[in-house]
Length: 141
Image (cartoon, rainbow, N blue to C red):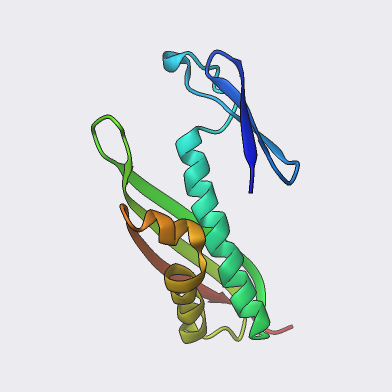
């Protein structure tokens, strides 16, 4: 896996992945940026949320569960020092479908957290990462 990050100006950078996708990262004006892109530390949260969501969806779909939507709301705390690393990250999954059982969603979230999500497992070596979820079942048509 490879990626490049190229400085544009101020505190703006363009990151490009080996798979050919690009993203703009920028800082706030009080740090020389123009607020034109995602902050690098926000990218880490998006990576953890994307990795975990990928797993949860895949596990539920492989189990042939009728899932129609999934989002993860991520909150994080950072230490008040330099470097301002994350001290806590919490992932709250909202899974929507028909006839979804809480036990099935709980298993998917747990498997992602403990076995499959490379991003959260890697970060959990130095950051307290917690997970919870809610299930919203849609009425049958």
